[in-house]
Image (cartoon, rainbow, N blue to C red; front, top):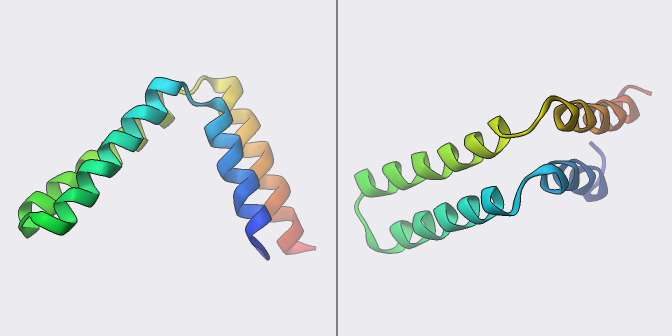
Length: 84
């Protein structure tokens, strides 16, 4: 992808389809991970990173098929710009 607008469009597609509670869970896990990066040992950091990934995965798993189709459409449109 050529510029940040392409990435922003894809991120927007995801965020627009996620519930507020899923976004809050991702933010909370991100804060815990950031705190661990500053204050904890490597094991805690690894566990917090895994917790962040789990929150993101859960949010994506909660998307309905229609939402996934829309996101894939946006991604495909952005990828088609590359192959032109």
